[in-house]
Image 1 (cartoon, helix red, strand yellow):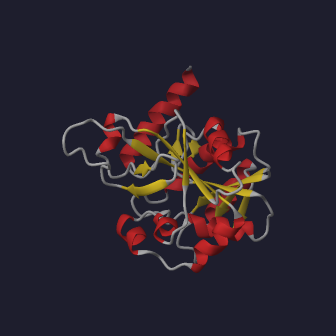
Image 2 (image 1 turned 120 degrees about the vertical axis):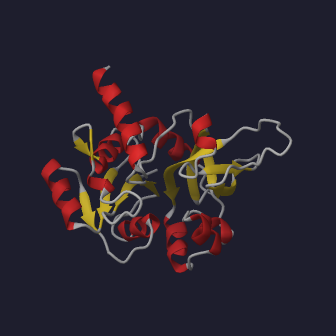
Image 3 (image 1 turned 90 degrees about the horizontal axis):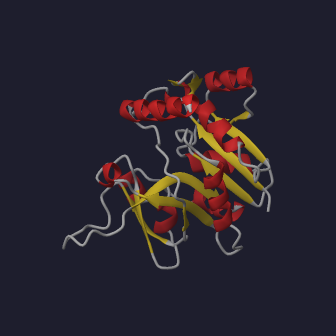
Length: 242
């Protein structure tokens, strides 16, 4: 099964301006993501997909493989779709450009989900730590017994009405798609749930396209805010000194 990883990277982020090029322990954020994803031996290729000439220049300076994509894309999935039109693969892995703590083990877990030929879209979850359960920047996911996603939300789901202490799972910013799923996604209008939560994966669910969720013990910290940036930098600096 040929798998290609695509890292969507745009410069015009809103919550943390220019975050793809923000320095973390001596390296731009996008570079941490690229090097982490490239550590997987299961991938045929790793490509940064950007609409920024500035990001492209930085990638050239560091020999990170990158490709310019349309500035009109509204989501990372649309950017991955553009890459899929020029590079053939069985599975396209989308690792969001704000996931500097990505690991080869997470990529392996995601590829395992896609070994079932009937799975069109896959993603990952991990047990949520206490500080993420009520954090709207940490997306939660609930699944049915077979692993299909029921819903993703920034809210705390499930709601613990009777104080039974349910298991909470955090959604990680890793996706896998077959080409047919990508082709369908871009033809669908933005869904109401997607617009409300600002979570593009809800477009699949709202249109009846199942997302299968694999579990990994390896957490990740997506960089959305200055606080996230400081948290990740402390973790990565700790790794460098160990």
